[in-house]
Image 1 (cartoon, one colour):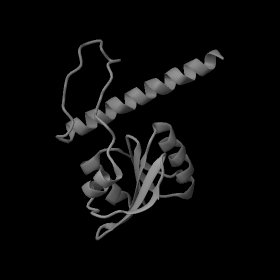
Image 2 (tube, one colour):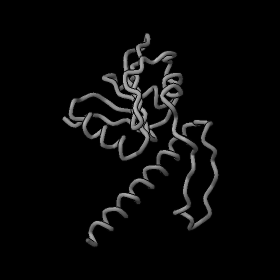
Image 3 (cartoon, helix red, strand yellow):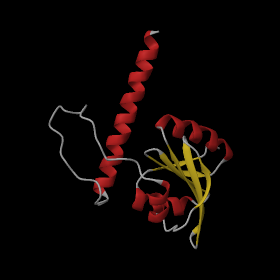
Image 4 (cartoon, helix red, strand yellow):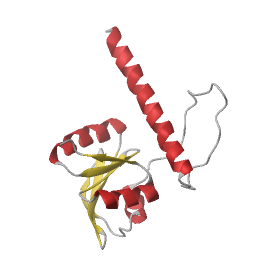
Length: 146
């Protein structure tokens, strides 16, 4: 049973490290929307509160999609297809991080590329397009396992 606690603590540490890295990358790239507040020395465990996750409509608008075609509107997730002059992609928002991770684990089996943020994923086949979106909405680019 003790190994379960270690796994949970390791997962929390990895999640915190990822959040700190993402925040640092956004600040370094001049994201503008993320306030830069230095943490007190030795206060690495202080929580970061970036605000609520972006909605499907907000993400779609920031990527140039004015009217996403909503395919799924459920309590656990909302998903819409965006068709723009730049290409086609899907935007999915989730009610929980666990739900997002389970969806992503399953989706990666089918290929494609994914821009992954806080309780949201933008999926498509054009990695370059997703990279340009990351400059507008943040997130980390993930590709499907070969």
